[in-house]
Length: 495
Image (cartoon, rainbow, N blue to C red; front, side, top):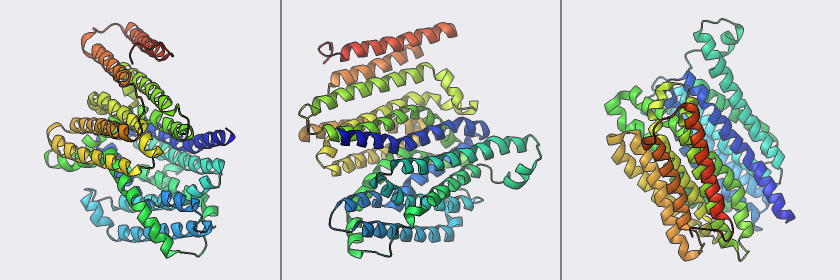
């Protein structure tokens, strides 16, 4: 129990910076949508979609390979660390040289011919983060959880602080005609949305500097044989990660590419901006899912030897779906309040895709729950195959539906992708690790939440604001009460 408690405590510390980081970045959305029109916010959305792919390419599974080879007794720990770092330093240096040499060509391809600096800035952001991933992994191996958290939170706070300064203060001050030393020294109106990227660059640089004590521990050792084995081990992880990134970000890239002929560059980027902003409202569930994963994954492994573990996993699925259904109801019932999170009304035209994206994220969470079977059995190749299956669906449906339905097609493609992955994982998982999931309950909770949303959206007449909000709050409480009654031991009505 002491070991499990230590693992749970460190998992919370390791997960906290990531969760807080996403939450704080989430809270930047009102700032960005207040200052930037959709065509500018679309630039942010698109560029970070590309970043997600680049991070996977530049780490090419080496972080996980480092964990794996560090735990084996075949190699000296310091040699493993140095070999991985030299590998990432080398590949990152090549990436920086190529990015700098072809920055204008890449900017032209991205349809940002006047902003080749974006290419260079992001090359350094991704490269620094790729190298930093290994010293951070070493901190985790050494059990230095507090230092791990301090480094990440420091980087996050720098990013937030610079966003608030440049985007929240300098831009409005300059536009209002203010004239002071801060603006003269630290602000140039030509950079515009680029300040969001510069803030990220400085945050990545701070993280790199704070990790310099770990970087200094590198030895002049590069084990070619071990490096080859690491590449072989990491290749499937690279493919799996790419499939996941396709599922999460391909829509934001394809939207611009497929609509640019009909809408023009600015119109296509504005569409990406509206889609990306509305997507942020669905990430409320993603934050819960991420927090759940940090707590649940070590718990699943810790419970795996218990003969009652399958029943426990099934019960956890019920609780997870109930929580997601409640979040869905809260967001949809009070969307007229939450929409102000997108500070500019020009983004509200896309609010009708929020329930679709919320459901998509719920099924993504269900997939993570179902993944227990291949993780416990060491059959992670199935995870890669299922993610790859989802990636194929994502690409095909986006290519088909975006020209017809625009970002609505992307939203439905996301939902169908994650739903299909969940169904496929459940069907295969029954063969290798049988968990008595209570499907009738899971389906009941999801359908009930959806029906309640549709009733209030289309059938129940509008009341005064106070009555409407009060009635919806009562419905949410009744839903929670019903779920509690159904989940009490030996009191289940549906099984």
